[in-house]
Each structure stands twice: as structure tokens, then as C-alpha cells.
Amino acid sequence: MENKISDLLTTVNPPECSTSDQNSTQLDDDMVMVQEVATKCPYTGKEMRDPVKNIHCKHNYDREGITAAMKLRKGKTRCPVPGCVNDKPISTSDLEENHELRLYIDKKNRQHDKKNRKM
Image (cartoon, rainbow, N blue to C red; front, top):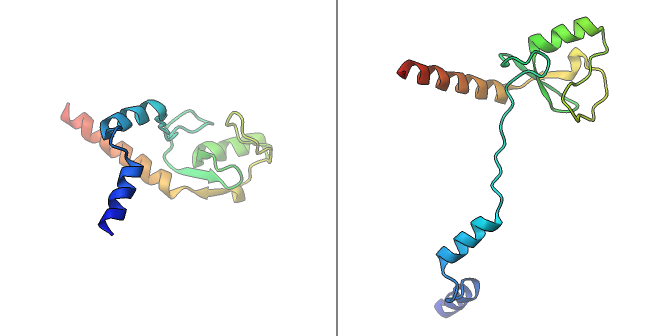
């Protein structure tokens, strides 16, 4: 059994390839991707306080911003996110609270406040 494991390890990680060589090569080949969470309302351009998600396209808006846009455009409000394929007018029933984004924004604000108090 130990010989099989040893043979398997040798096959997977041959002696001529050290682990550090593999890691540096892998880092060169891998692309590091970071996704930034958008916390600004696409309607108001301000930080969201009460985020809601469009159930059709999954884009987020501040409740106050989208509500004002819907009143102003009288049922013809569409998702303003560039490249969004959702062409349906937005109605109140298309919006749901985004609890995860709300928690993220609250945490971000607490960290910002804590950082400012230290200065």
C-alpha cells in the first residue's frame, strides 16, 4: 500500500519538478481575478442604503432611487446597467430585498467608520 502511494506521489510530483518551481509556474499561468461589489445605485450614483435586486436581471438598485425613477418614468423604467439584456420595464413586484448586499454595505460602513475614528 505504501509503495502504491509513493509511486502515485512520484507520478503526480516527479522529482525533477520541485514544488516551488511548480508554484511559480502556476502563478505565471493563472490569472488572478478580483470581483468588486458595486455598492452605488445606478440611478442615483450614490451609495446604496436599502438595496433591492431586480429578479429578472439580478442587478441592484437603492430602493429610494428605483422608486423615484419608476414614478418619474411612469412604468417605463428599465435597468440602466450598461449591457443588461433585460428589456422589461421594472415594476415594484420585480424587486426583492438584497439582504446579502445590505450586510456587505453595513460591514463596509462599519469598517470605514472604525478606520476614520483611528485617524
